[in-house]
Image 1 (cartoon, rainbow, N blue to C red):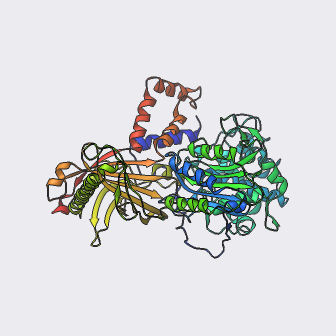
Image 2 (image 1 turned 120 degrees about the vertical axis):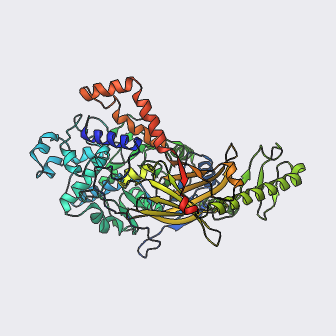
Length: 638
């Protein structure tokens, strides 16, 4: 078992053992700034109707509806280009239309562009060897690293180097550990996805230029394309991470896809060498992976349309799909469970693109279809009044579907029950609102100390990716302002995170300063009851720049409504999305699959054979979705 795997195994055990704080082996320093709301240096694509670009508005409406109706799509934003014009775009509430978003491994494709720029400047070639570039490394590194390992192998993910993603949380010396790890197979003979290959490409840029890759790209890529609001995290060695850590706006993602469709040319300037773009976008290696079998230079290749298309891809739904035969780009930012585009969202897009019929000349304008598309986009983004639905099973067991119309009237699918149901619905809504106000009034000023302090405001996935680990929520307090705004105070370490509840379908926005890094949030709240008629205050805390959401549900007992005082106890259930489906598979690194044949492999195999891994998996689920209890501070309630 590699040293990095051992560190990751220890970290997973720290998580399931409810240890918090500085459990990483990587030195932390705050990096991420707050998102700027405007920029004078950006350029923007022209917006046009789909018909003016040879595409039907009805097709786009159908695509957006399918994506919105799929619960697993988890879309935050989508943008569709044909040529140099945006023909469709929307955000999905509560995510704003104009905000950068974490791109995860989509960043790898940008790292490849930096390598293309170096090649175009004559400072690098695809067949340059890593041992030649880093000749100043230790003798051990020179001995361990295969002398056949080249830039080409890093770009096509065929290095075979054993130091992989686990290394990002195992220590500070990523470059040294990579070069001393050795290779599991001869470079170039097999595909093995490894984010540290991309990191080493970034290290090559810094080695050859004396600049970080982010600095190197600014005058050569960001500025020519009018990309200003962009941020890229650094490693502990002050090297741009390369394989992840890039925050970028959807429209700027589209510019990068457009640049490749134009052979590396932007307006009248050749940015990337056309030969490099051509090599990057053709099949370089077969992956052996289902549904994503072909790989170029840090690009995924597919033949969905019978001709090769390609995409930049990051986990959890970050994509730039490029279709050269249609001159189209589709960009997505999301928070789903997709890995390597193997999920419902990417499946829908690729399926619809297989059969899309487009023409070169403009189609006749279709005003009704275009208006329908615009209305759908406004509704999805939350820019129209919400229509709330109540489905069958309630109010005297009468099946009905109720919707609140534009004037507040309630309509039923069974018109003969319209009046009676409307009255019952109104009474139920009034009762629910009365209970909500009474309960929140009693909670006002109360603070509850939790019996388990292992879960933080930050979702676990974000903690690991950004090396920004929780101190654990120790207490939860409640406060109601004079204007009726209800606040939840989350006490974590030395910080108090103030969460504004957004009721009635509205969303409350704010920011969280997590150890010096600023994250925008949107909060959607609801007061309801569970299957046991227990009052529950539900909260979804969306990190709108991220692919993760923190869920915080607070339960009370029905008897609490009978007392004029604050309840003595609360039950808190936490979760995050994407959650267990993403985190638990990480435990594979401590199973027999990677245990090896040595003494550690023997013990891990015995541990697995007696059901030990099942126990660890159960603990992991409990770590991601814990239930904790809080006791009222008496001095606060008195």
